[in-house]
Length: 292
Image (tube, rainbow, N blue to C red; front, side, top):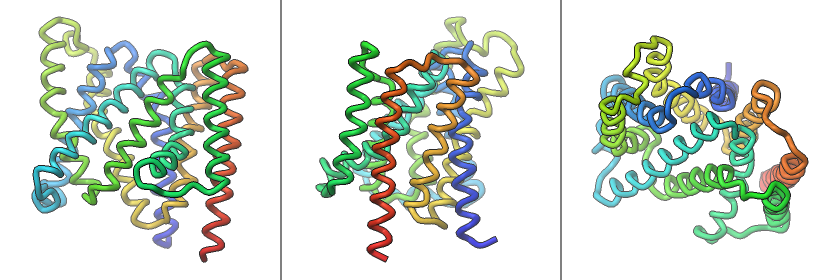
């Protein structure tokens, strides 16, 4: 198998796992979302430390050289923790479709953030794509009666996270390790607090729940590592196409497995976003072909 095909396989596995995440987190819907997040941060941190230091024999100081970088990793660690927590809460409170909207519009949010903060120019097609996505969100807000806060929160938190990561130039594995280390004290503190208050899943012996919480770190880290392997072997454009596998999986799970309401507002919103993404994707392909 060529390196490119391996990269496609890694990328497809990564986004398929992310697309199936609702099935995993819903197995823990009897556990407080904050406690799930705390365990996710704790075990992800331990997994990354073992991987980085124990297996790869890499030291953080080899890649993180100053206080400014450590502070930026604190910011990105806070952003990704917020994103993880909001996503878990949304899944376990019946908002899978809203979460899929968030990850569908994420590529367009990235374009918008690049325009605002990196002064990247928008061509006509990108502008039209953004307007379609905006129209979908506005229609949903007006027709459904409330702003899709979950969708926007997921899209912008992950978009800003990616924007900051782009400016740091720190490899993915040590960066994620440092981010989870920053979040570790808060995670441990919450787990202890919940246990002492008697409201923790650890207060009662449910082997499956304990195993699922323990594996939360592995489930978090494995697709990120697969993403890193894919990014080393294929173009970002190819990764961009594959990333639609994840929200599509969430979308199908929300409708056909958990029977979430799929109203006219949802339909119009999704159609507008899909049209915007189609324009964005076709424009990207044409520009790449022209450049080649």
